[in-house]
Image 1 (cartoon, rainbow, N blue to C red):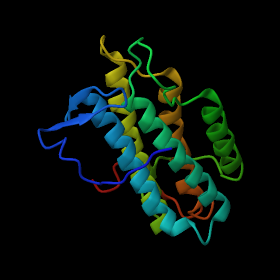
Image 2: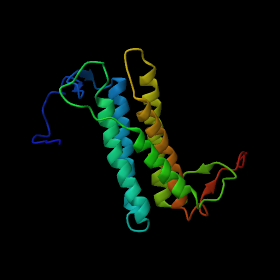
Image 3: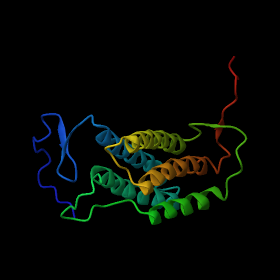
Image 4: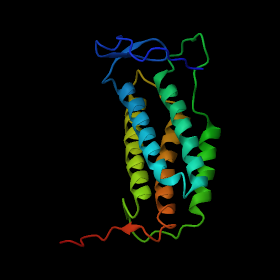
Length: 193
């Protein structure tokens, strides 16, 4: 369990932050950028939940689970697998978390009509907020993929799958809160030429 007695430590005043392994990295390091963007996506989901908690309780419960899983993902990314034994078992995203979010996506998608065009973010405040969270999750995914390509870094396959599913989930959820897609705003190619 995490225990935070003091919020400021002054250890980051030199522009570095500590990873779960104890290693110090610059705050603009790609690994820090990746888990920081996961945190940003989590915050966007928290904002979206202000619009879902009353009218969409089942969806809101799914979003809350995702928020908790995103903290797991941040912990996973903050503790790179260096092959060395740590004095504790690092928290990792596991395949059952991926399976759970896939089941949630399938459940939500079951009542949606197939799309005829791309969806523009909007339609309702809840949908717009979920689309914003989706785009931030996609940015986190891009950082994670870039990090995984570096020869001296590692990202677990389950972590990459999970963040990919998060943005898929948020897309489907944005359609659900738009009256199951009835209020979706569709892209009309070249409409304003």
